Length: 181
Ligand SMILES: [Zn+2]
Image (cartoon, rainbow, N blue to C red):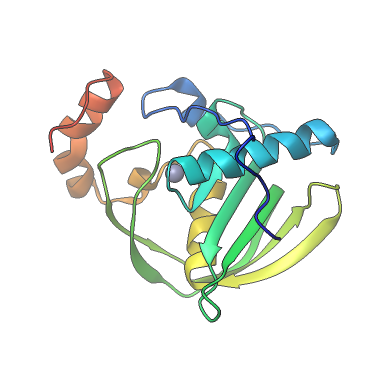
């Protein structure tokens, strides 16, 4: 997919930890129309505005099963853009540790262990059912964003000790206070 938006595309505000939508299970998408495609373009534009590599619709307070990713291709270094509706992960395999962050949990990063390859079934913005195999960065971003569709955040994957260490920062986010540097 070439760059799927331009300067005129509307951008949304990303909601922050503590907002109830981040903990909801998002709804299946059943209507694949121009409204959905325009909203996906807005999500790509929002993702770039916030300098993210992935964004799930619940993060802009729309609890529907849609996510977008924009990651550099590991070989060509060109940007790879993908919009995914109704994803289902099959055949997760391997384990891999990688540091993650989240636009909805600013200033917190931590190492998360996840499968390093997977097969994903999903619908395109035209409602076409597809299957893709993903590894590396793409597999990582997809899993993080799919979690958002189920109300799961990357901090949920951390050990109780790590979460306890972050609890003060998380409480401040919940109260809407900015983080100290
Ligand atoms: Zn996230």
